[in-house]
Image (cartoon, rainbow, N blue to C red; front, side, top):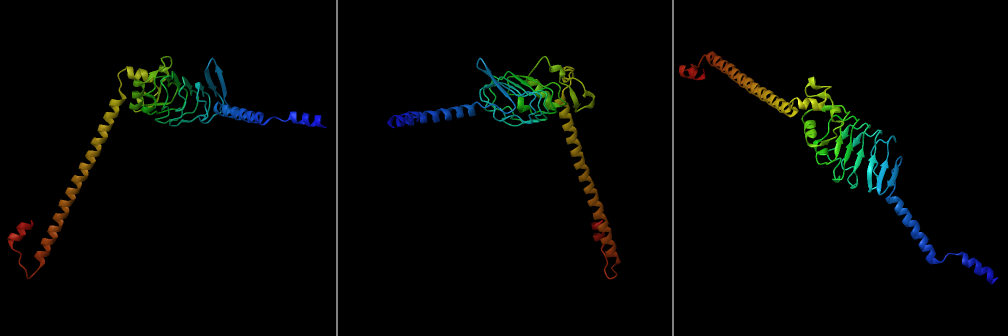
Length: 261
């Protein structure tokens, strides 16, 4: 009987062993949470270089649970439509972001805020981008691909191209689908700028013309009001004079009539 009791007792873990098991489970849970991989993505790590591969995964937005140690982020060939502000602010180790072949139409001005200087490549090619805020890209040191988008060529886009580091292999594929002047639609933007065209000067001229038209309209309105006011007063004066003349018992002095006229 005693031997059976001792055998059962031996099978029961000591209190210290249970605490160690619980601590191990908790540590594993926290580790898994901290290094979790976004759904529909694959996370790899070769020689300390962490990569998150989400290509062609039918994603409609950029995942929010990307591991903080990610260096290479592949989000190409999805259905992403926008890049909101501060999307990558906690990913200080990123070196390459591939957002090509999506349906991106909108990029917020602070979309890449907080990106480290280590970012080497940002691929935005093959999207639906027509306009992009200058502030979104000018502070990046990365090489940027903007080709194969339906760009609207105007001053802001010209300023962006002048201040960012463009990928030399795809720069000739940045084409104006529309433009502030229709004659440039369908032409490579770099060729247009190299020919001496300055969209910012066009913008200034357009602004000047609009201001001139506005001022002319106000001037015309003021003149019209003055003419109406003078004519209206003349009519009132004539009516008043006729009324005075019609009074039988009152003689109107010539001085008064001359003063009214």
